[in-house]
Image 1 (tube, helix red, strand yellow):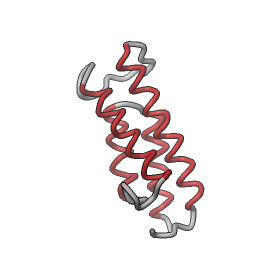
Image 2 (cartoon, one colour):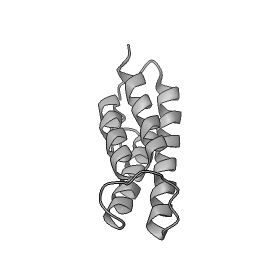
Image 3 (spheres, helix red, strand yellow):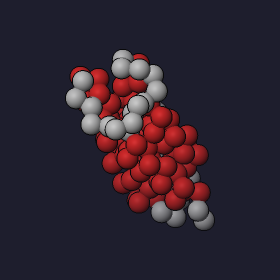
Image 4 (tube, rainbow, N blue to C red):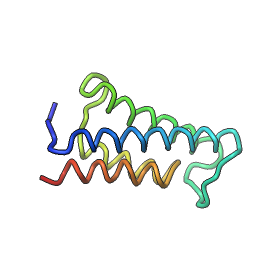
Length: 104
């Protein structure tokens, strides 16, 4: 596992972003969404993809290198996808975690 200089901050930001994405996707799936922008994927596919992305981010932080690698580039990609499909704030937090991992 690559040891990042800001490993603990990255982990906290990514977990909080993943949980926010999970909550917003679940709320959007049941029809109680509080997002103000239109997400991609419609009313059924978008929340399902958001739930999957949130679980992937949380798994990458809780069990690094076992199911999914703890990688800054992966967090950048997942952050962009979370912004597009489910949660703006959660995606930005995951993006910040990825950028912190790339900064030496």
